Image 1 (cartoon, rainbow, N blue to C red):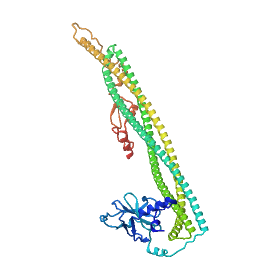
Image 2: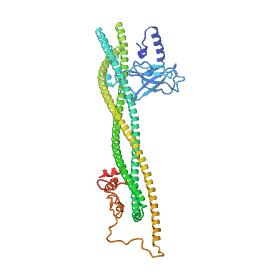
Image 3: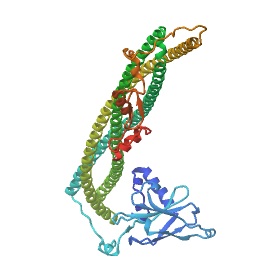
Image 4: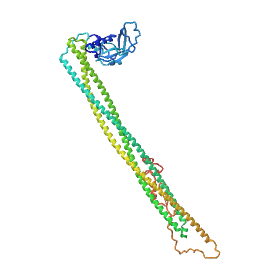
Length: 586
């Protein structure tokens, strides 16, 4: 077998006239560039320089390149590395031109077992020349190899051939098992991807629900702040109404105290007294209603405090849900990383399967060629070398298959762990969903209670407006009484002036001197209402004096103040949050 034909790629080995035509065409094209002085091996980790000769029939192109191919290549895309050829400016007029190609050690193959060859490829992708095979070995290893000039005879028995066939059958079975396992891993990866996609959708839905709950919480907080401000405003209005009523009562009492003497002189004063009694009764009735309103406001404040506690509990639950969602996102990220790692392992297994198939095809071709050589009884050096290469490749393939078996077992164990983790993540998601539904129910209940409280507050406001109208009416009645009293005073002054004028004839005085033995005049029931005879009560917090109120009313006033239970500081001007911070600071 000549050198050129021994360097052809394996896919050119055909039978019949077609194989002969292809071989002749390859010989014509490959002979246009001839590689010279190619050794059998190059030292590893060193730069490599190859020399080649361009014939006169070949016209080079700047886009031509020289590549290193593994023996058995099928297309020009199977190169390991390549370099562009040097531009040839002195080709015209010369029969042959010798050039060199330089390869750096970083891009050279690292495998010391495989054989390679140089190939010259033109700009159209046609191979114009190929070198003899060579390998990358150290000189010590090269010395151990047999001398190619020695005549060796390789004898292969039928038992060895059958054993090789059995080993190839076993390898084929193992390859089928690896492929089945690869298919299983692919299906498992698809399921994991579907589960990851579903988990992603669930996380997005949880995020939307979380945002919705956050907006509802903000609305609830705003409603509570509005209720709190309205409640404080109602307290201020009640205090203002109380002060106005006290002032009006004091003025009315003073007016009635000044007009008691005049009312006793005329019987017409009885009507004003009855009106005053009715006014006092209405004032007492308004006081009772005011007490009821205060009790209702206190109950409402307790309800608001309970709602605040529920809101704080809801916020804590929301924070817990956020933490759970963050943990689930971390688990999803780890699952994605594990999926990427498994995809890389699958790709590596596929490449290994392709290499094993390629090696199997090479072994079949070598086996066919070996059988041909046995029938001809003329073994060559190339066949001996290929037999040795086949033996080494079989041993390496067996080692790789054993390693891949262990790798597959490890991958299956990891897949089981990932499944367990995904089941735990699904369980955690179910728990978070139940918590979210419970929290939504609580928010719904709080909203219903707030709606009821809003209706109650509107009813209270309407009641207060009615009481304001009643107070206005009472004020008008008091003004009418004051005008009547003024009219009575003017009439009394006119009568006094008539009686005090000197008469034209002496007459008896119209009144009798006071008798010391006469019983004292009866005391009027309203003389005890005067402010000078009553004791003024003082608030122990704001130190304000309130004449004409009872101790219960003073206690209710003191309860309206916001006082720190630790330092007894008056905190009426603080809002609820500032007051709580002040109390917690102790």
